[in-house]
Length: 324
Image (cartoon, rainbow, N blue to C red; front, side):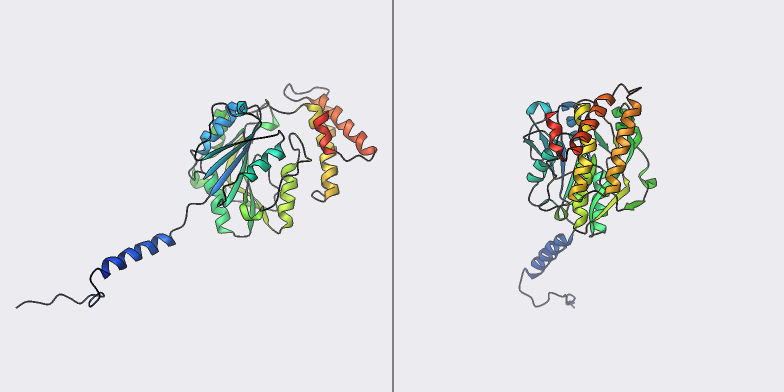
């Protein structure tokens, strides 16, 4: 005696219904899968072709590879053998950190969710982008993340790549999990939610090295009620390469003029401006007696005094640093 096949959910349906339903279900499951985060990394560089080639290579090795890399430079010689490709844009234009970072913002892919700014001599741990994007996705109110610089060559003669790699190596299971709220971004490694900086630009009156441009930009992001944090697990090292930097006199001028300018525009408190001015003048005065071989302390001190003279005459002109 023959036995009838068991009834199925598709019994009585038109032929081919089961395959169509399976296909639609497959599409539905795919549509619910999380999309790959769309991250653009911006690099402003000038006169450091070796360093910028190294950081581009490092970015392509990230566990979360960026959707796009935008290198803002002055001429082709700044990027050495780098060439534009599907993931790399080279944006030529005038020098100046603020101007160059604005070129990055002008060249973001339309669908980017996050924009990250690294210095050309920054060395991120391979999971830096992944860690930061995860923080953004967990906290929709988060507007800006600054990473944890575990070694900073800017404070001394600089770091080698080998030293930077040793500094960022470590067991990911024991990475620091702390975060500090209200932390102003540190320009060598800072990330922003695209929607939090829509329409904002770096202040191009903060010329050349752009002294405190990161603090100024972060203050304007905070005005939009965005949260700014420092993230312990986003680990990197700043090599502090000395080549390609501005003269001591120009930097010294910006060390005094830029805080006063930012105080006037409301992105830095009077106390914060005064503290930074006094700290830099004292450091330059004392260390000019026994200057470090890699810092033009006397040039910085001269620039400090030129700025003080301009302020005494009622001039608040941060762009004058370019003409010194």
